Image (cartoon, rainbow, N blue to C red; front, side, top):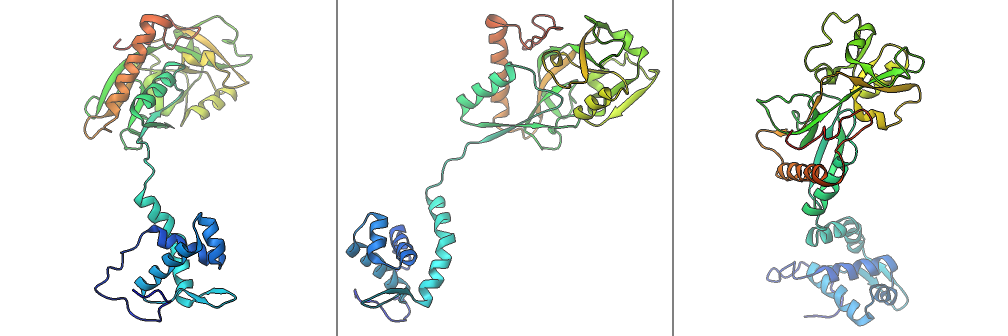
Length: 322
């Protein structure tokens, strides 16, 4: 094997071209960047003779000189300049491919309206700790929170899931609260009866119509229904005085809008709360997340606090399996 810089020639067909490793390529790039074997060796924590041998080995394998050396300077040859330009992009990708950083699996959790306080976040933390996966939260303004269109892998659903297409695990129920503008006749009261809503225009988030009126008690004869497309529009429509709205009673714990008040609803139907995922082809971690969530709910039920509790809710309303 010659140790002098080779002239332009084809590599020996009997010599494997890839009888190289990353150190040869890294050595070449270091010299190409510094145009100094001494500086490149210091940069790599090596020594000049070792670096020189690595570069010479690469030149022998490729059959072309990569540097033009004189006693005073080092310059890239045309072949060396081309190789440098290619390796600057390719070498980081090659290193990543050969030593990939293990990425965590992702489970996409969809929801509409608001996430229940406390226990959902506890379930996410516990699931991520146990599984090594990461939960991505997606608020979706559509009926099934994106599960039916594979936008998410699993969803927290308020209302009744479609039994023919979804697998559902019932988590419990939530109560309802009325959203009203300040200075509205219903504002400032300790509670409002469900039947009183019939006296006021009702703002309904179209994606949540079934959850707001699960038993059809509001009826088609309501004096006026104002439709909107999502939760934010619902809040703004109420704030603008277009009517009142019905929301999960966890809004009683949150300061969602400076122009609104939230009043507990008495006599309102409960809102079913479930985790849903596709009946076929579900994400392999969807069941595990469901089990962790049930476990968190049961733990809270048995020991520490009422689940999903809000000022207007009855103790123990959100219970696994209820």
